Length: 176
Image (cartoon, rainbow, N blue to C red; front, top):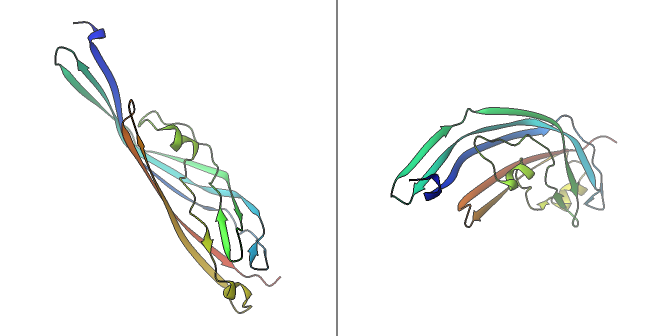
C-alpha cells in the first residue's frame, strides 16, 4: 500500500490561560457621565499554554493510526500590550479588544483567531451608575464583566474553539 492510499489529518487540543493587568494606574476623565477615549498602553502578563497534537492516518485498506504528541506546558510573558476604552453613552464604557502579539505555538497547534487575539474577546459595554459618577463621595467603583465566544469549524478543520474572558476594572476618584 502506498502513502497515497492514506488520508492524514491532525487534531489539536489545548488550553490557553492568560492573566494580565495594567502596569500602573491610568488617569481617565468622565465628562457629563461619559468616559473620554483613552488607550491603556501598559498591559503586562503571562499566557500559559498546555495541550497535545494527534497525528491521524486513515488508509483505504482499513488501517488507522493515531499518534499522540504531548506538548510541554509553556508560559510566555508579555508587556506593552494595549487596550482602548471609550464611551457609547452616559454611564457606559466600551472596552476594545486587547492588542498583543505572541509567538504562534506549534504544539498544540493554534487557530488563526487565537493567534490574532491571544487575550480573548473584550467584554461588552460596561455600565456605571450615573448617580455614582456624579456623587463626589464615591471614591471607588469596581466593575466586573465577562465575554465568551464559541466558533465551530466546518470541514476540513472540523472542530470547536471556546474562549472565555473575565475582566475587573477599578475606578478610583482622585483629588484633582
